[in-house]
Length: 564
Image (cartoon, rainbow, N blue to C red):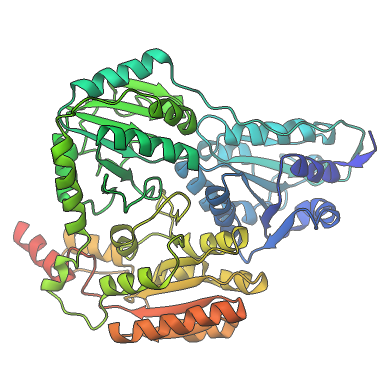
């Protein structure tokens, strides 16, 4: 053993844990770690972001895309509070993220020193574990535990606070070993019970989603559903778990669900929920299933034992990781001549119909057709393009009309965090520079983290950003019209010229107001990205009347007034 500072020990542990990227906003409270990272700069690429929310979002997206824990560093106080939005997102999305936060020295603790916060109390409800490393000789222990906790069972975020006076302390301490993620596996009895329930069913539906899926697990799932002719729906913002082009795929279960798919789930006699949390979004406000005991037989499989029976009491609860469970699924004896087989083609046809030009255009004829925009984009970018988005009504155009071909092609926050899409896209391009990455962003959504364009320029992350500009917080305005028709207040936005804003960063910028102009602007943007290896932004000036693919503001307002 050699004598090392606590900061150097920390960086050495990151290398042992396999970290090769970290996202940060620098701060004096962890300047010792920054210095230690300098010596590891060839092995750990440090991505400096322009806001701590961007660093946390990028760490989350990096983890989702690579399957490896995301790592972020932020300074104490304001830095930590800024990063909290990303940690909450990682918690609800079950993403393994390790956030290191600078902290006041131990000699100043409990005095409300400059920027001092008790991180155990602050982050406790939104993490799997929060701790403070007061002694440098315990750094290996704490870091190894952080990675172990973040990646085992239901994945999630961990926060470690780093007191300033711990970082320069010289210690002789052995290194820890690399973490080994541990996931539970289903028992023979549970798999037999699942097969028995399926054999009795007449109208089963599979709902897949959640964390922990691998390529092999998705392949095993596909073998199971193909052998049993089962219809498959994907949970909210987990649409890349199952190929949307596959004949067994019947749609996504989330906000703006196809009414026919919702009815199909309500009328099912068996729901096989493989991986998702059965939360508010995936259950349409807890209406697709009745709590606490569903009308349908329910098989719920989840890596986190605390999720099983949280809201719904299943007929069969299986605590298992998705790779472990899917491997057993692939070996399950298929049901002979399943009675639901003739209905599969009908379920798929309902999805295909839902993909067509939406009904809203029967009541509005905007000059910019967002459905056609998505079709043009699908034809122009590679099939494995990564689509990232934040939160807002604009995201419905991606969720409903994009066909995600497979795992790690969708980066979207189940927590509904505005501002997620742009940082997520940048992290994706940094992690997978050979992939095409597209961010869908609303005007309000973009301006929460759009300054990360500077990060994209700094690191040559050539992402394409589509800004849907309707000059308002559209989702909130929609709810206002439903609840308080004609009394919109606090939702109007005065926006900049987004194209010129992008150009000021050194990116490509274009503004589109008609469908006819989108194709040429897209071609120019993609060409710029290939040649310059820099990002591009296309502002889509949309008709505020077309608030969703299903409704106009006028129709929502009129219906609300009739119902008052």
